[in-house]
Amino acid sequence: MSDEIKYVLDESRLPKFWYNIAADLPAPPPPVLHPATKQPVTPADLEVIFPMSLIEQEVSTEREIEIPRPVRDIYRQWRPTPLYRARRLEKALDTPAKIYYKYEGVSPAGSHKPNTAVAQAFYNKEAGVRRIVTETGAGQWGSSLALAGAFFGLQIEIFMVRVSFEQKPYRRALMESYGARCVASPSSETQSGRAILAQRPDHPGSLGIAISEAVEVAAQSPDTKYALGSVLNHVLLHQTVIGQETMEQLAMAGDEPDVVVGCTGGGSNFAGIAFPFIGRMLRGGRKTRIVAVEPAACPSLTRGRYAYDYGDTAHLTPLVKMHTLGSTFTPPGFHAGGLRYHGMAPLVSHCKELGLIEAKAYPQLSCFEAGVLFARTEGILPAPEANHAIRGAIDEALRCRQEGRSETILFNLCGHGHFDMQAYMDYFAGRLVDQQYDESELAMALAGLPSVNG
Image 1 (cartoon, rainbow, N blue to C red):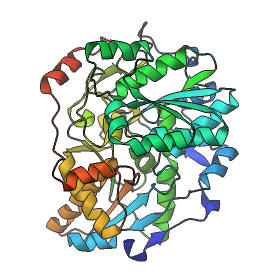
Image 2 (cartoon, helix red, strand yellow):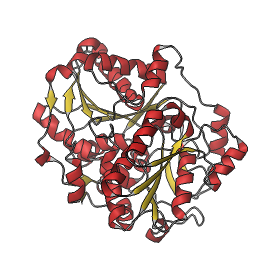
Image 3 (cartoon, rainbow, N blue to C red):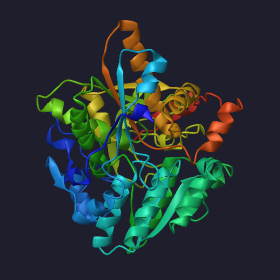
């Protein structure tokens, strides 16, 4: 594994604070708007679905927010996570570049998602919440919230995008093993789900639809709140333990990255690795290229419009300004289910507009090719989502070979692929294809964006 080059911090070095990039941005992001009035939302508007402690984090501009002791105590089960030098991959690519990867797959749920799941479960428990409802794509977020629910004695209900529900039965079994209830979305359990099924009984689902169902249930029950695994500011905040640890570990290695790469769907793992480095640049520190890699079949950063849009298909959520493909857009059923979302996190989108990050889009066959090469050189089988980051890092390393440049490349390996074996079986059998989204559907979805001044 990585030629025995491994950088691990002692658990006493676990970050004590989450980093809030809002404190360092040269211009504040546009406000979140109420879906009915189109005016900035108030904390009271959000309290229907979130506890006040998380709402306060959502709007905070403080640079550091203390991580509660009970959350840090649970983090210690797997954090700090290791940083590896990928020497075997470097040799296979014949590149002068150095490649490092931060491995988040060592968490009990197998991905970076528990970093925010544990935090959100803690704050909901503190607020007296009994039940949390959420959505999940590939199942990594659902698994993580189910785990956190078990830790804090909370009832967890999960609407899982139907195509992933069918593709990934072991993810579903993991959620149920942790005590959660998992339902295929769109479902007949909600008004928004029934409306979708009435139009198309075999609808494959989307994260936008699953969010609608979860928000609908949460808003109707006083003892229930909603939790989101990506996109929102407080979620990205919780993930910054990744980048903070990485900075210390690279210092142990005597190195600094020239390029930081992360896969992007809603933006949480990307923000986790990238935001601390962006913040350092904004405070006058070392310049670093930041590259966001997304699926070509759901390209919100590279093809989406920067505009106000709903976070869900049924238009129950507030309006946020983000790179979006339109809330009614249904991505094709490619295997990286965690990246099948119509919008990008507002903070990530804002960074793109400010020129702080770059964005690239890749088809899934190219990403699986990269993931298999990584597995055969480094020994870790990546999640389909993480394959996008690997593809981006490999292409940067090949660029270095072509240009004769010895740069340092860092990427976030956000999870393992042990519950995604059907995807690899399909790839090896030649059944995996590069799926294309419907251009006419995209045009219709973008034409339906809400009218908002500014």
